Structures are given as C-alpha cells and as structure tokens.
Image (cartoon, rainbow over all chains, first blue to last red; front, side, top):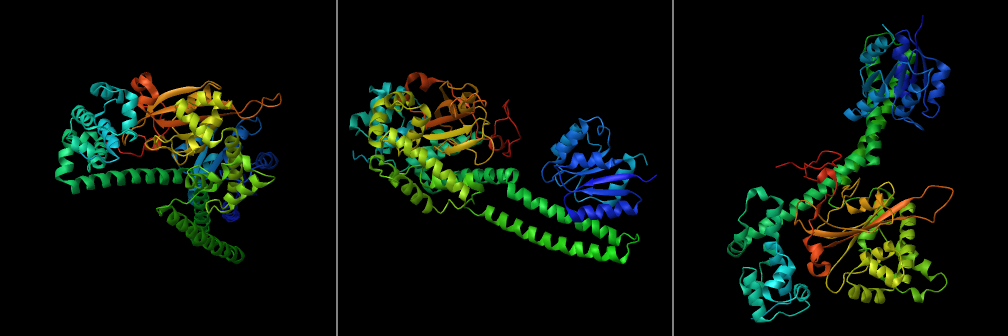
Length: 122
Length: 446
C-alpha cells in the first residue's frame, strides 16, 4: 500500500525537491504552502506522516503542531519538522510540543528519507 | 591662592574618589551640607581657610583642589579601578601617579573610556544579532536558498533516474535559487557593513524616534511658547520639526514623533518653562510636590523634569517609560545609568516594581555594576493609559525618573540607604548571583 505524506512548506523549490525525492521513493506526496489553513489540509489529506516547516505564512509550524496534538483525530500523526533555526531552544520547544523528528535546514535527502521511513515503521 | 571656577567640581570629584558622603565632609569642615553642595556645583566661591580645611579632610593639597589639572585624571583612574578591582591598583597613590606620569595616566583614562565604548558596542551588536528582524529575514532567505540548492543538487548528482523534463526543471530552480542566494548574501553583507560602522543605523520606527529625540536632547525650544499658538500654528511648528529631522525617515516614525511632540506641547502648556524651572528650584526636584503645584499627573511632571534643560545646579534627569508588557517605549539616558538599546531591561528596576503596583509611587536608590558605580535615585509610577472602560481590561504604563543621588538634595535617609543592585540588561550584566537572570552574560567573569 502506498504511503501518504503531506509536505507543508512555503518555499516552492524546496517543496518540489522534497516531492520528487519522496515520489521516486514510492510515496504519494501532496504539498501545502499556507500556515493558516495547514491543519485543515492535514484533515483533508489524512497523511501517514507530515513534513512541517516552521516559518510559514499566517501561522508558525509550532502553532500548527500544537493544534494537531490537541485534536483527537491528529494527535498521533507522526510529524517531521524542518527548520532553519537549529538552536537548542527551538528543538526543545518542538519536543515539548510533541514532534517526532526534528531536522535543520539545509538537510540531507537520504537522512530525511531514513527519518520518514522510520516514522511509518519501515 | 588663585581659584579656578571649577574648584567646587574638584572638591566633589575628590570626595567621590574617597567615597565620602557629602554630609559627612560638610560636618568635618564645619559647614552645612547644603552650602557644600553649592560649593561643589561651583555656585559659591570657597575661601582660603575653608579650602585648606576641605583639602585636609580630603587628604590632599589645597593647590590640587584650587588648580587641579589632574582632577579629571584622578576621577578616571578611580573609575578604571572600579571596573577592574581585582587588579588591586594603588588608589591611594593615584595622585602621585597622575602627577609624575601624566602621559601614562592619560593613557589609562583613554583606555578606560574605550573599554566603555566597546562594551556598549558589543551590547548593541549582540542585541542586534538576537532581535533584529531584518537580519533574521536575511538569514532565513540564505538558508532557504541553500536548502533548495543542496537538495536539488543531490537529486541531480545522486545517480538515480531523473528524466529530461525534471532535469531541466531542477536546473532552472537551481539557477533561480543561486540568484536568490547571491542577492540575499549581498543584502546580508550590506546590513553587517552598516552595523559595523561607528554610527548605529536606526532599526525600525522606534529607533528612528529614539535617534530623533536623542539628537534634540528631548528638548524642543520652538514648542515652548504655547501662549503664542494661533490657529494651526502648533501643528505647523510640529510639522516643521519633523520635516527638518534627518532621523525620521519612515512614515511610522514621523507619526510617533508627532504623538510625542503633541504630548510635549500639552505638558509645556500646563507647566510653562519659566514657572516650572522656578518651581523646580524651590521644590527641590520633588515630582510629587511639582505635581501638586501644577495640578498635573506624576507622569506629566516627570516628563517635564526630564526634558527641560539641566537646572542651574547642573542636575540632569533621565526618564524611562514602558508599556504594560514591560517593553521600553521611551528612554532618555542620564550619565552613569546604562540603558539597553534593544530588548528587555533589568527586572530589578523600580520601573517594573511600579508596574506591578499601579498608582503607587515608588522611590529607590539603585546602583549598576561597573563604571563609576554611581548611585541613582529612581522615582517610578504606573498609571492607567486611558480612561477606565467597561468594554476592555485596563492597560497600564509606567514611568521612571532617574537622577544621580545628591546627598544635600536627597537628605540623610536617601543618602544612607543601601542601594539596590540593578543591571542594564542580562547580556552585559556581570552579576552572577542574580535570581532574575534571563540569559547568560557575554562579559567574561574575570
């Protein structure tokens, strides 16, 4: 069965590269660029795993993660967070909010793939 | 013995070097503290016999007080010693040192001043890196472009199959991201170049306003004739001041300056300069007494005290105000009391104690680390920003007037009060035992 991934990323060229890498690896990929409507996009897409950028227009990735963790239907969704801010405090904040994996930009394509596979159990 | 007009200043300098209270010295030489205060502010000539008595009490030669070519040097040496007490400089021999080696003493003074300037620059740059939105946006732009290029390049060079259409698309993306990276990097270099210049570049409207106000010492003589206003004359006078300012470049900053100047005029109308200065001399810089005299609020009086030129006794006052969230919105500095250029200030400032207890005036003697360790009197009050409303919760703002402690002016109780140790902002505060510390200092412990 094809695994579904939703990429919430407002940088179109990063989103396109991620989409290509994942599609080539056999994932079904959808993308979304707005922070404001991100939670609804998650509910609509019902992905197996979510890739979430932090700095998004309208609403930050942290706020989106908090919303997801406080709703029954999205609480258990595995989330891989991508951020340009890799400071300890950023990582700690993401962990407090319930992130499953945290990667700083620029990231390695293979490392991202490994993380995603682990999040959905291989 | 010939006396220069600065003999009083030298007496004060020498007394401060020895850490003596004004009242104690006055008692030693048999005069009142008020009279010594006048002497120290060069408002009374000191006779030969009194000069000798003062010199004896201050353990120096009368000629040093009367002629005192080294007074500035002595003060600077004392300041340098307080900055680095572990060096254990022989402070009791500083006069001897300054007299015998004036060149070396001048070098110590210059280096001490340079250290102070560099500390302020470090503070400004550190805060800039931490809080500056333009820098954060530039770095985000660079990292986003690098991320796109790295991921795309890895796809193209990774050995997997990429059909021609995707190859063309990725090459186009890489070219676009390369252009974007180049532009972002150039912007970053320009930003850092501007930041490294000696003159700080204002960041945002608040800083433009601060530059404008500092440039005018918060004093606007053209707005000090409220009885002469006719029709739109007031608005025109304000518009002219704003238009002639090189510091106010953005519309937002100009609007903020307009609001400030309108309030300035209101205060000037309620407390005309001549009458206010007369009352200030008579009532001894007491904001509460001045508020009663002019039937004005404490914040209005504090603004007036801080913004008018120094009194005839040379006393100057600074003023800080913050909003209900503690963000500093107005800052007029006073010598010896460091203010943060950006970010949050020291929570031990009476300003924030006042914010926690609205409408209750507060007064405290405080002292900051480093430098001359001068003691300052802070008077603070928190008031409601607008009339009470049933529709929304109250919003408070707080004001704090700051002036150097003057033994004669402030009396025995204040003079002997144990100062509250406060900082400027955590990043440049060396105190390690502070319960209110938010973040580590950038100053070395040694």
